[in-house]
Length: 361
Image 1 (cartoon, rainbow, N blue to C red):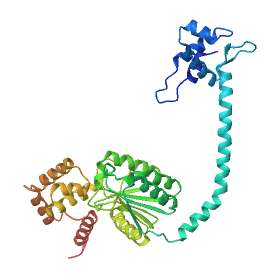
Image 2 (tube, one colour):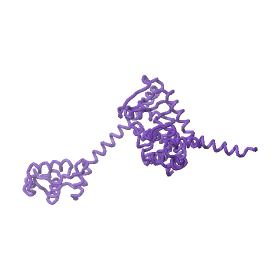
Image 3 (cartoon, helix red, strand yellow):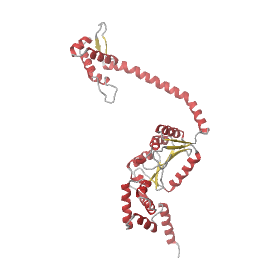
Image 4 (cartoon, one colour):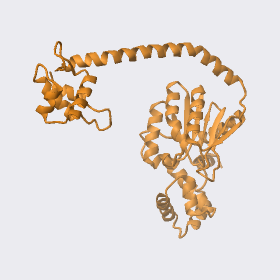
């Protein structure tokens, strides 16, 4: 008989995995004798009767001691393997029976669930917009929308570091939808390319089959399912105002159209890509345009999803390239030099210039 095995059986059900050391001592003492009485344990272990009785109660519950046959009031130790068989087999059988019953209930409810979901899809909702800041309600409504989604999920959001409640809850639901074959397209600002947390999220999404691009045109956040249900900020100016869940297909379709337009000119983000890649010019063009409009630095940084420190570093590099003495002057000079505008516009300008050079005089 192994007291080490008994020690594992005597582990208390708790995070610290503590063991009833005195019960182990009692068990070890009983192992060395054919039979032992509680009175002998009190005397030989020099312990109070109450403590001995409690240890015996624990050992009886774990089937590690039992009454000695034909010896009234005496106890004998039981092999740990035999105790495990006696204790665990009934529990395993109960688990098996419960699983079988659970499968049966699920099977019985399946046809009713299909009828209920079909009726709910066909029936217009009594609520077009729900505004809430309750995380549990947001989570449940996200779960409902994700489970009913069969075609497409559209996501537009800032960096993960600035992620809000509904987008954080949505991430595992999006991954589950991808496994079901639901197409998912996510849009982030260019600055997400320099954010470690966002890049880690992108890696998980793309490995699951999602598509990710970045753009200069990301100024807010929304999440749309099948262009029927949309989750948007309740108040764009107040991050703590909660979420508006819009059950109006026309609104969700409109948001989907905006997503499509931004998606067309956005840059694909690969999980293994390093740095800003081809988006650096587009990002600096955005900074220049906002500087030329006279907007404060902190407002510009917040709008493009960049920290103040990173923003100042980019501005310093731009001013050095343009030999400008102020931010406003840098914006004006960039506009005069045709350095502002989207990357697509700049590509078109270069294309037109090349075509003009090739035309006969």
